[in-house]
Amino acid sequence: MGNIDRVIRVLIALVVIALYFANVISGTVAIVLLALSAVFVLTSVMSFCPLYTIFGINTCKKND
Image 1 (tube, rainbow, N blue to C red):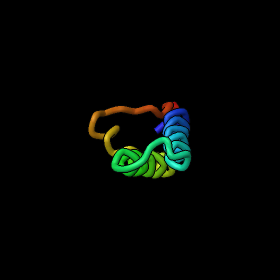
Image 2 (cartoon, one colour):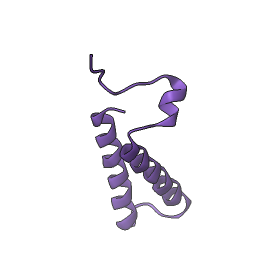
Image 3 (cartoon, rainbow, N blue to C red):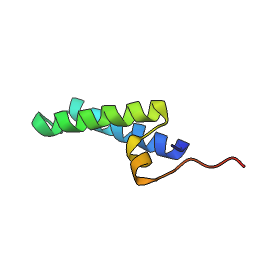
Image 4 (cartoon, helix red, strand yellow):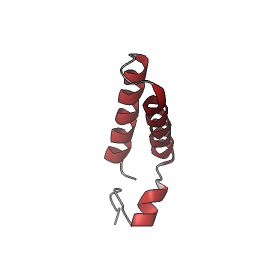
């Protein structure tokens, strides 16, 4: 997973968290989005996304 991909995932997670605490989102939608945000942060920290492996996506620059 590339650095830009990791940053975008963390920014999306931060936006969702901010929307939750500002009471813009609530209920089931909030729970689903917060869970997705947790997955985004976790995959960013680990620099690995299982779905990328399944679909053959690579956002990391290759060092030759």
